[in-house]
Amino acid sequence: MRTHDKHVLMCTGSRCSAHNTEAATLFQQLGQKIDARPQLTVKRTRSNCFAVCKNGPILVVYPEGVWYSCPDETVLERIVSEHLEQGNEVSEQVFHRLGTGDV
Ligand code: FES
Image (tube, rainbow, N blue to C red; front, side, top):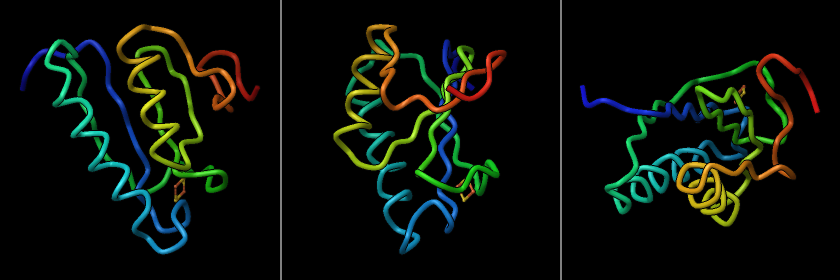
């Protein structure tokens, strides 16, 4: 396994995705966006459920422990560009933070 600085967990479960396809498509797009930025050392992993099945798909970035609602590719692009590349949270999409709780 390659060394990574961040770990992105994304829910592709059926309760986060009306037709069980949107989240899987976003997960694929996440991989493409990471691969298109070779300077990023980000590992991505899919999850079946984080038990917060609303406003999904849910995407979590560690080590920061920032939980995002990521409903579409526009938001996904912002998370990759602004958070993963530049280190800035996309605050309006954050609904929970590790150590802080719901926002
Ligand atoms: S199905 Fe995505 S959080 Fe439960």
